[in-house]
Length: 228
Image (cartoon, rainbow, N blue to C red; front, side, top):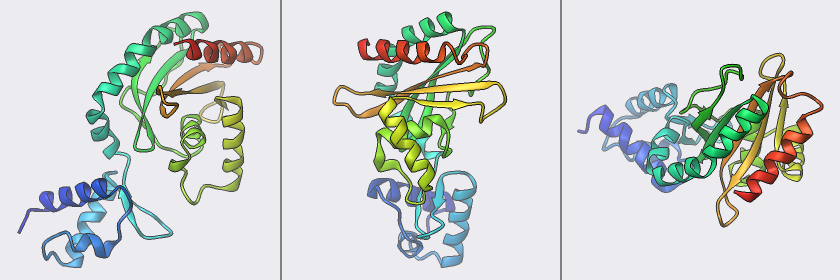
């Protein structure tokens, strides 16, 4: 009988290949005669480690945020493309506005940080490799607004309405919800066919991203992104 590691990998591989959530019964059938208690323990461990997620309403199992790291490795070419295309702009924005700039790649419905540019005085932000999958964050708003297939079925009506605004204005803005005096602006990044493949995120305190210069930053970034 395969080891616990082998059975776990088979579960993850099958869900990844199928591309949609699977039931407990289906997963038991994959594990070569393992009893339900054994499979239940495997699934619990995979959920605890972030490799699987169990939908609270349907009871189905789908890939978790930790799997995004492995998927990102398979799309290394796109990662290098994004860095090569936008890193110069990131340095330019950091220098002009003294903000921290994050470049993120869209991987399985979550944005994964692939490059960060900051100065000695710009704001602290998440490290490269961080997986952004929390509902309500500006980066997640961009994902849902410009790639609706990733919207969860249980997203509150209030957030759905906010997505309409995000799509219409072409960016997401967060005013101090993460921490006091800290603002974030997110801009979508598209491939040549218009598909969402990443985002550019700016973060700064209220002295760096002020009410006065916010419109200037937004219009300037949107103009430069359209020219890249």
